[in-house]
Image 1: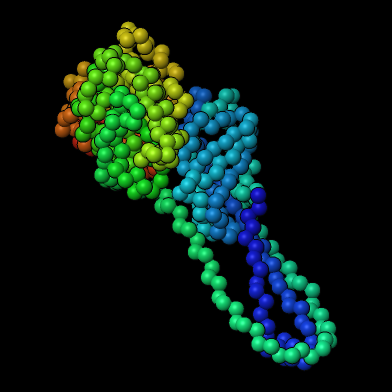
Image 2 (image 1 turned 90 degrees about the horizontal axis):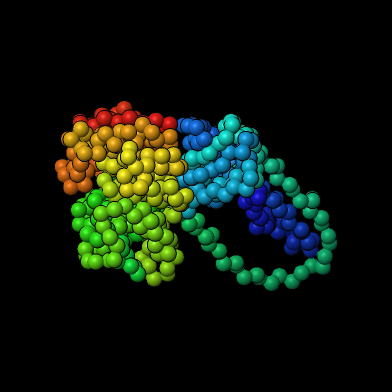
Length: 444
């Protein structure tokens, strides 16, 4: 599809033309058709790479006239595939890739840019593609400015002298105002502070939902987090209310695996049931499609994460093997060396998303296990340790706020592609610079 914003100029009569008309000469007015100026350049950067996978950022600069709606295409030269993308909507057929704008970043002014990032898989080699095209126009870094095409010279044809009948003055027609695009998510999610509603999930008492009270105030579809509770508590989730309210207030919808009032829901507690988390994603999909739901078309189901504390963290690590999950956080948890609960550490090889492991220091019963899981992880991974938090500080202790801040920043980095959040998690002046914190990372 060409970028084309051609228009027609309304004919206007000069004084000379009016004189000719009164002298009995018909004038055929000329017009000039104006075609759009086009041009683009693309910056493609492999930001991280690990065996079988990689992360990349793409910046598309519009060198032509302003556009409202963009589509970037390219071909992967070595069979790479996209597994997760943020700030756009991907489609891939074989090696051919198409990424279209999200709802909030379709308008790109002349000289402006649209940015998105993705994770992908590769096998053998991972060369950079080169054949990018924006809305069908090949991106070469050059600008094409078509010359206007004038119409033929007006012909003067004598005609009988007309009677002068005044024509009614045309009423001016107002040009429609362009609709404004929602503000792109350049603001870090941690800076949000939306009022939160805590409610039972529609149609089932297996889940409690934490969400911004007014979803439209968020300004764009919201990411979804499914959460597993400590001790694999599947009925009473009161322990996590404060922590999950914190996350939801930053613009996330959180689906917790417990009934809203602690009442019996037929689900046994005490052992991991990872399917509760994946079923929670399916519940969110149904709510996004249910017209009477406050979350109707308010969820971005391409941005789904799993997280959990202690036994619930093990649930999250297993649930994250679901291809709908794009990020996972394990709080004071991990797979056991002896395969307790039926999940050996070899399960870590099944992860396909970035993962953050958090522990509360040497007093945390999960300290050694968390570290061992980080060491074995093959995907992009973060190990964030707060030496004073112990096993429950991130959930109910004095470290709740800074622990949930780390969770929000990691989700903002991996789901939303936020650069400020990335610096906070991976940079030396962010989380790592805070008192009592030690941060390691790999494969980013």
